[in-house]
Image 1 (cartoon, rainbow, N blue to C red):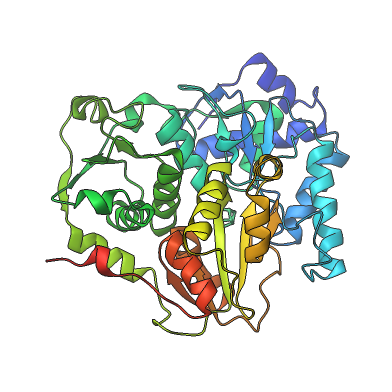
Image 2 (cartoon, rainbow, N blue to C red; image 1 turned 180 degrees about the horizontal axis):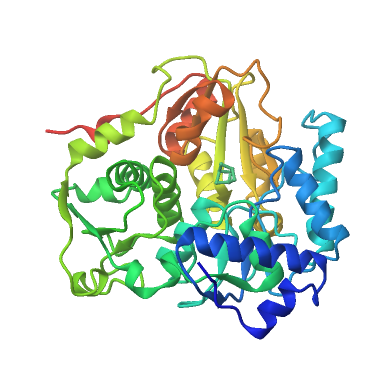
Length: 426
Ligand code: F3S
C-alpha cells in the first residue's frame, strides 16, 4: 500500500528535517499501512505516554530520538513518569531505577515536551478544543479527549505518540474520521434510583460494565444525569477504557457529539440495545473487589487518574464530615496527582486537614510504574475502577473498590468497610 505523502512528509523521509524526524515519519508511514489507510493528517497537539519505563526500550528509544536531533513540532504534554521527582528518596525508590527514570524524563523535556507529568492532562495545561485533531496516548486521557471534549484521537501507544509529536502527522484513520465516531451500541439506563446516580461509584460501575459489554465499539448512553461532573466522566471513561478498549463514548445530552440520540448515532440504528439496570451495576461494583469485608487494609490509593483540585476539595470535606480522622497507623493513604493540581491545593485551606489525616501525596507518577507499594502490601482499597481492575495483576494484592467515603472510613478503621445499602436491589 502506497501512503500519499505531502512535500514536507517526503522531505522528512529523505532526512531533510534530521534523522529523528526521518525515523518518526518512516514509522508513521508503516503504521498508516497497518491502520489500512493511504493518507496522513495534520495533528496539532500530542500527549506522550511513552515516558513510562516499562522496559529499557522506552529509555533507549527516547535517547535515540534525542541523539538524532529529535524535537517536537507541536505542543506536546507528557503523561506520568515512573518517579515522584521530589519525593522518590522518601518513598524508598531504588537509586538505580530513579536514575533511569530521570534520564527518561530529561530526554522528553529536551525534545521540547511540556513537563506536565500527568495522566489527566485534560484537567491541566493545553486542554484540546472540540474537533481538534490530536495524537494522544494513555487510555483514560484518550477516552476523555474524544468523549468529553470532542477532540479527535486514536489510542496511540508507544511510540506512535512521540512520532506524531515530532512530525505533526498521524494516520488518517479510526476516530480521526467523523464516520467512525458514530455510536454503535445503545445502553439505556433503566430505573436507576436518583440517589444512586449521584454517587461517584455509580459512574465507575457503569464504566466497568460498559467496557465489558462493548469492548472497542462506540457506546451511546441514554439516561446519564446531565449533572455529571468532569470528574464523574473521567472516572467513567477510565473504567471503561480498562475493562474494555473504549476510546469514545457518547452520553445523550451530556457529551458534545450527542445532543440527541440521532446525532450520537449519526442517523443510523444501533447494532444492539442493552438495558442496564441497578442489578447490573451492583454486579459490576462487586466485580471490582477481590478483598473481603473486614479484611486488614494496608493502603488506600486515590488519584487514578490523577486527582483534580475538585477531588482534593471533596476529600477534605469528606474527612471533615467523618470527624477528621486520623487514619489508622498501619494503613497508608496515597494520593496520586499532578503538580498543577498540587499547586492549587497548596493555595487552599485543605492542606491542614489532609496532613492531619495522614495522607501521602505522590506527584507526577503512578503506583503501577514506580515501586512505592512494597511486597508487604497485601490489601489495597480504591475508589478508582482503573486501579481496582489492574491492581490484583500488577501489584499482586487483594483489592477493595468503593466510594471515597468508604475509602476514608476504611483508612480510619484499618480494615475494609464498604457500604452496600445504596446498591441493594429490591
Ligand atoms: Fe494514571 Fe496510573 Fe491510573 S497512569 S490513570 S494513575 S493507572
